[in-house]
Image: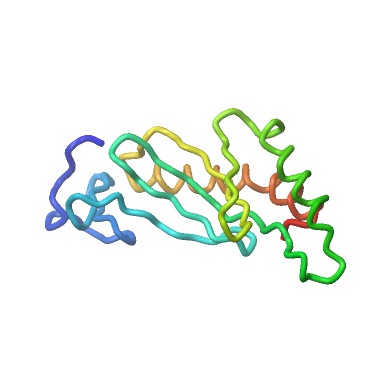
Length: 140
């Protein structure tokens, strides 16, 4: 990320960011990789700005527990395992220890509030078909 005006010269605050009058972003606290958390279709999402990248992620679903009545855990797990081959280049699927399915994408860092919000919207819209697919295999 390029050098930004100090948070003191910012004209407004956007979550963990200071936004200067020209729209450039700066972390409100030095040395952090600030993130904005948002929800899309009831899913927790995050846009984390790091020095060398913008990391977008969403908790897209969860493989059901064997204790859930009517759930076919093995079918869902196999279907989720097949998804990465069908996802667009640059997207990653991660399975957390508690069997949540996380979809992630990394982009070049954004330096303005408008470009950050634009990328968050693009991510949310591109997420939709993957959410549909996960819901269809029982990973709600």
